[in-house]
Image (tube, rainbow, N blue to C red):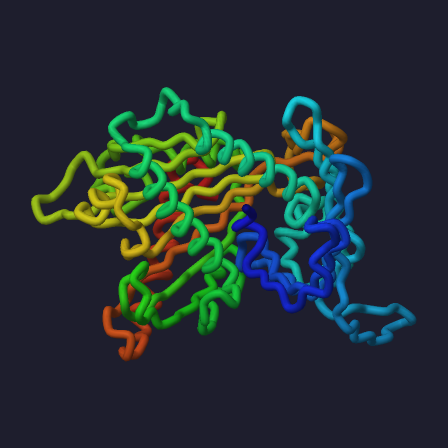
Length: 415
């Protein structure tokens, strides 16, 4: 439900499974890695207790609190904590007469701000990175998606040639693609990434490069995978940046896979009322005779941010998926973009949209641009035993630099 926020999670111990066959009184010891999709924001690791309680008929509370041993160091009579800890946080879920749920969410976290790059501090301190607004906006979007997918009515803008099993298979593949993209940006423990020396000293040219070996995974090509990610500030609104990057007609302005021309949408699956929440299958309008690749793309957007994730896929595999075949054996490596507003107190006059319909950011929370994360996962050698070369790293770094320059040029913000 929260791939952009939760890098990994596991249950260490079930202390109580609840009473009377329900979750009432359930108590678990868990661990989680939480992330903002940027190499400039460290992953937050928590070990915590989760308690579920039914307060009344149709009213439930799910509350977390950290149980980490806190290492204290006294500096100028101030106590600092290692990384961060989760003070009582969670949500209250109330059943509503119309079949909806009313959600009240609270995030209460103590963290060391110095480990967060200055570019992201306004976003994080305003709660727009890890805060309640982010959780609720993501939950709302995902629930809307589930409601559409479980409905017997196919949205009018969907590709009608897809069978129900084909839709499910294609959505499952897109979900795996997006989850893999998110897990690669922040180097979560899901994959055993090895960190290489970062390229660039300033944030403008900082690129974090990771590498790993892909072996015996039918969902990935075998070999040496390099993941490069960077985050930059752009003086463009998040909505404008998202619309530009997701538009297949404009893709040739930044994507070398488009062969210099517009892309055509072969299939479309809506995942929400907003037209920006969808899964698409794209092909280059100018294709070489030897070209055997399509582009699978998933785009997600809500009040807290947006994602554009894509991966090249071969035509025979996608034919199998669109006919309802097992998508687990389709090998892909995702690349893409994460877009968030640059946070309050920044450099311009534009107002942040309210992140929900209730109390939210007020007129003093100003935003003038976007924080864009660009990440590529690329197979640099098909032999898992091969050695990574300097040339391979430079190629990926140049790809990111070139893509960013093209985006800046297209949006007229080169300087």
